[in-house]
Image (cartoon, rainbow, N blue to C red):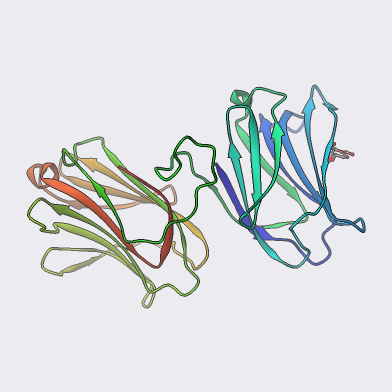
Length: 266
Ligand code: GAL
């Protein structure tokens, strides 16, 4: 699933989101799915198509476009086995049957009159059984069992959207005796990110604060022999030390705070 958040400028004529097979400019790459909102006609609509060998195929036209000039939007592209479903601002809008193999798509192209706030790739969602429904964002608290603790090489992924007036966001790891050897906390009041020890000692993470209201984020924890490595939105930002035995004894991940969760994966 791909999520796109942004705003349509007041004077927008058109923009396009292309799921394309390559990124060269000349020759133009094939486009498996071209999603093209057009605003310059009296009835704004979306054109969907594929580009194959430099030639556009048969267009499909979708009226009653929920996107508006001057307004922000959230678009979800949900790629199924045979077609892609698109929802705009929480409502299903269209589906498009593939004409080119999806396996060829490796590039997301966004161009035209649009300002993009965030693009997110949500490729695993525990909330999405069967994969045919749009996953809804879930309000925390959320808990995941770690039946065998954490082992070197294992990763924890948390993806979500920060709420409009956030206070904090907390990710904690507990053992079977309800001890909390490590907590990661983002505080929006002082815009700091820190590891919190079981005794409440705060170790600040000296990295840019990458959480913003109404924006997506991705937290990745990678378990190593001697602790956890942290990446935020794809950038490594530090690590915390924890003994191997402490890691093996962890039994639960808890996530809480001012976010909507789209993926919590251990
Ligand atoms: C053409 C337009 C292209 C693309 C295509 C889709 O008329 O120039 O940019 O939108 O339609 O069918």
